[in-house]
Image (tube, rainbow, N blue to C red):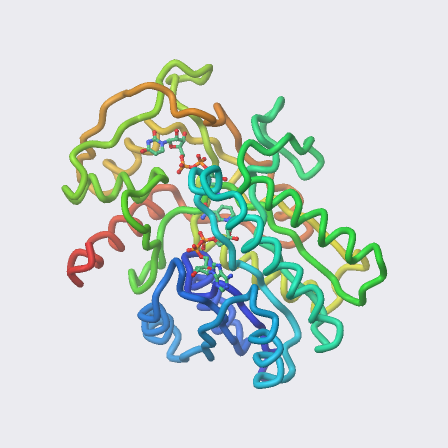
Length: 345
Ligand code: NAD
Ligand code: WQD
């Protein structure tokens, strides 16, 4: 049986594209809206090569209310939305706060406003472990305190969660699942889609794979004097395909009324903390490729350690992150090699 139509905003982006693949493989029909500000059309080819299905695609900006209204008119029967569309570079958000508040918040508010009249039942929202700041205790549960945001980007996630909560509290006939991602990494095992960083990568894995490829001279490890076993920072690196699968479960939960709660929050992580040095080691072991690196000073604003308690997602959503770190590292490397083959990087 053909399942419902789902609107995926930011669906040609990194996490969005992997989620579109999983949705289509689960039988959903997908409409993507993306303004291609941080992705490109070729991603649609990758999705089609993996699934055999080309998703409907609308090139438009979610801050453009008229464009969204046209989309709902042109693609009737959308039952759920997954909202990935956002600007996500932490450093840039400090330089351009208005761009971040406008893009991330207007996108969400436009969607929330249009949902009831268009019969859309639920929205899945991409939040982040950034809301926990530097936690007092690890692993963090969904009840762990929310800390003051340290960047406009992080603040947009906190405010977005509050906006959704307030709109649902006002009686809007919609549901929401808020997913707090830890550190998404890796690529689809086919190497047809993956992360496409713009310019010099700020995040660890793209910098690491580009260094392994010889595009960057060496990877800087930001600090080895933290209060962690090897002195480097600890994160919870979550495989992007595992992450994508959680979205399918979240959509099902909302649309099939598997919960009476109108709003639910889940941490999406592995429950395992990995240090920067351990990650480099895992990459080298998994791929046999060396990563030239050196220890440098701490990066301003870095969190020392954070990892998830994913029990709620495991027990309530029925989701587990089951990829090994080695498989994830191999997928990241295969993707980097594919970019090289295609002459992209
Ligand atoms: P991404 O930049 O690869 O994908 C976002 C997509 O949204 C891009 O294709 C971009 O072109 C599009 N977009 C941005 N603004 C838009 C707008 N106004 N209208 C239409 N399209 C727009 O980012 P990603 O890593 O896939 O992240 C997806 C979501 O997950 C974001 O909301 C991000 O904040 C959140 N998130 C990401 C991470 C991470 O480390 N990657 C961690 C936690 C949360
Ligand atoms: C990971 C670790 C660095 C680069 C960011 C956002 C957060 C969330 C995920 C969206 C850290 C170290 C990195 C390098 C290094 N995004 N590192 N050398 O900082 O955990 O989180 O992305 O919501 O909001 O802040 O991810 O990949 O930048 O860093 O040593 O060249 O790698 O110090 O310990 P981070 P990251």
